[in-house]
Image 1 (spheres, helix red, strand yellow):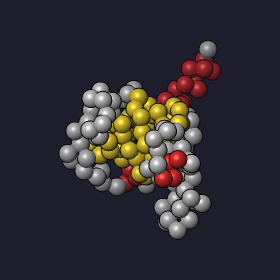
Image 2 (spheres, one colour):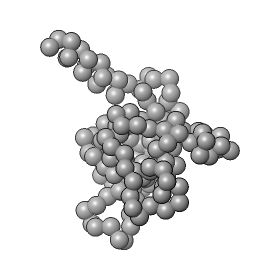
Image 3 (cartoon, rainbow, N blue to C red):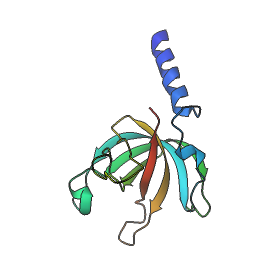
Length: 144
């Protein structure tokens, strides 16, 4: 029992740790209409309505919000820790090294259970049901 509590305590402190070396997104100003959030990937999926690169590569994930790092001006959404949200990763959840070889900002890709920090933008579509919120992420920093 003590070992389990120690492991859980270590994992919890890792999720809240801001002293990690890979903090590039944390050092930047939060863009308008965005919220900076730390999240954990719960599941990865595709949508049949996807177009472009997302037809072949998975771009969607169910994400649990672990921590809100801050808000950019004009963000009107309401996100809190423990919220579970649908997120479209506009550059896919795959490593971008070979997908976008000319890009200078390569992303490592994300898998289930990985923790990341990103600037999240709420996607608003007139076709969405009023109670359905989806969000979009362009860049992120992998935290584990």
